[in-house]
Image (cartoon, rainbow, N blue to C red; front, side, top):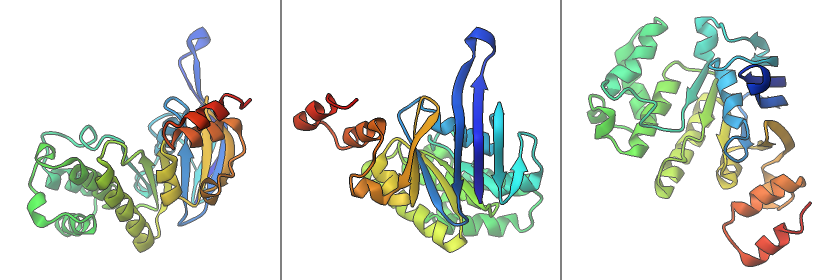
Length: 258
């Protein structure tokens, strides 16, 4: 469903140019979930924004369902790929009600029965009708992210891009949202591309993952490799160790890695 080949993204020109993504390639099967992990600034979110059409590629190709995509896309192409952003408050218009936020994509794409779609979308993400006419500031962080997920799904996309959708939430709420995303993927046959710096979250959500640093993929592996402590690249090993929290013995072992 998702094919990324030799993707590169550059910001700026001349000596001020920054290569944010360098020769990145991966594939995600239909109905699969693929994770991109790495520290802040590794380029993983830039890959996501390029797939969404928000950032132009300097080189390489992106295909969704076998169809090559550029920045200029048809409504059908944009409908097929939707994104859930990291900040559930910043991604929702503060002066629009939940009803307005969810109905707007329907109006843009000319979809019928917007009222029914809004009601069904809210129910699917576990929100009741009483949330429909509230503003974002009247919702909890978890409820706001559920609205953001509902907005992405209301257009019935094939691919959902998830940019650290739980990192701004409390740990208990994170688990609820991850379980919701898993249920929605099964129910709708969705394909996920999931970006996170949290390896445990990716292991729970995705079948495969790629580790990124300095704009490049340094390792691709099954999520089972995390549970088996089988990542090979030194950076991947460091990322895995850091996700476990501080331990004096592990810190000393990291110092010996090349």
